[in-house]
Amino acid sequence: MTEAVVHLHPAGRLAALVGNPNAGKTALFNRLTGSRQKVANYAGVTIERKEGRLQLPSGKLIRVLDLPGTYSLHPRSPDEKITCDVLGGQARGEKRPDLVVCVVDATQLRRGLRLVLGVLRTGLPCVVAVNMMDLAESQGIHIDLDALSRELGVPVVSTVAIQSDGAARLQGVLDDHDVWHAAPSPLATQTAQADHELVSAMLVRLGLQDVVRHELSDAVDRVVLHPVFGPLLLAVLLFFIFQAVFSWANWPMDLIKDATSWAGDFVRQHLPDGLVQSFIADALISGVGGVVVFLPQILILFFFILLLEESGYLPRAAFLLDRLMGSVGLSGRSFIPLLSSFACAIPGIMATRTIANARDRLVTIMIAPLMTCSARLPVYALLIGAFVPRRTLAFGVQLQGLVLFVLYVAGVAGSMAVAWLLKHLSGRGQVRPLMMELPWYHVPRARNIAIGLVQRAKIFLRRVGGVIMVLTVLLWVLASFPAPPDGATGPAIQYSFAGMLGQALAVVLAPVGFNWQISIALVPGMAAREVVVGALGTVYALSATGADTAQSLSPLIQQTWSVATGLSLLAWFVFAPQCLSTLAAVRRETGRWLWPVVMAAYLFALAYAASWVTYRAAIWWGIS
Image 1: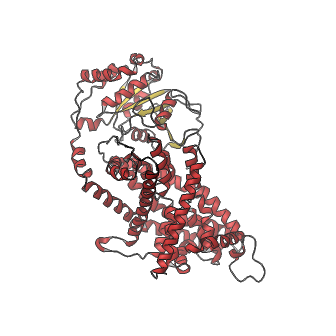
Image 2: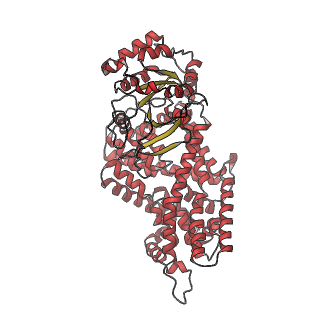
Image 3: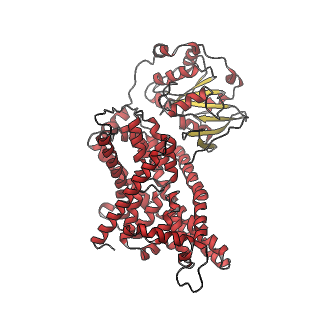
């Protein structure tokens, strides 16, 4: 992900959503704005910024900003500092909000009201949205909203973000002109030191001083957090996800392959032989189409990540893995950034900002690229499809899905080994207690998951239409020129600039079994791992004299590579830092070029060593 600076349109009122983590703030944002969202980054940092448009009942349009979750306006992390800077009008390139909507969890009023008091001290007009009212009522919690409004001196409304009309009352309040120009609450003059006593007295007057337990969550946690059954359940869950990535994606992938094949045939039939036909069929269709075909697998992976996040299970997974993480010198707090790295290392590296310990944060950054990101998935799918037979094992387990699971485990094992080594080089004797909130379980909402999947699909397709398209076209140019000399007997690409480069690199990579075609593909693959698939498609399309490579790339490499070479390339991609954007993100987060250089050096060394061992072991075992 590259950094983007958003310049706000000066017209239109701006309402900012503020709330504790897990208060349902983002769900409410999705309910208010739907698909009318713009996702970018705050100026100068890599923290995600979400803004959307809301049409009020009167027809007026306002802008809604979803600020990062925070427990107070005394920031302890970069995410919380963004929220404080925006509310204080100190964020570069950001307009100070005209109004703040404080989203409070109805089942956790004590914690939420402390944040409300902090927001009131900013002097901004404020509306309190008491969210999850349905859940509170089901637990016997009855909140007198009018009495709470009198206590706070600002409008208070109930919301249920997961229901279609759950934000209607809030929209009605936002449509009131006077709310945007309300005088500061009398509580705005209170000092922060008095917040605890003030909130406690307020809850006593409202009859809400007793803590209510969530019996269903407690009952589920007795199994999910069990020291034996909990880790087993997590392992089975992850194994099921990787099985689904292959078995569920077959049908939509076949449709995309057929469409790509038809498009290539159509171009070759209706355009004369030459550069134009080659550019469209070999560069665009074979290159870009060879990457788009893996979109179903990527969306299936994201579907499960969003499902676990929506349900409240992810923090439990961090808790379960705290002991394992502690054995290699980290805490369970590193789990969430590392899990995010399964989607992409860049947001995983960004998420390390929640880790207070500087040494833990740096180690987590350094091992984040070892998590198997979604960009590796197209490469894995291509190689597994070519060299691992589609076979069903005992209990209906798919062999290809099992191999994918092993590759993910290899990345995790590699990261834990690196962290363990760093533990013994630094940080001996440090104790890192884990303190984190375990939210109550929720039924995942299809609407929120759908919005998340659409956003991920757009990001992936923008990459296909942006950097992957540019690099694929550039590779086609390098692979098409200069023209082969008279009397040349080999494919034209061998005499091109790309062919010369590939043959030079092949000398270095020959000990690990890579041929010149693989060597060429690895060069543009430094920009993004999935480019390698498109690059191979382009290289073989230009080598195969018009063959339908989008459809036949997998059997093509199956015929031309040894199994040892395929396994070696799989091992390479478990470790290799084939992503310049990740290295750039490390530079931004650490503020120094030293750590990106160290990261690239040790990851390339690991990749070369793993590929060499895999290639030699395969040959020794007679796997060719």
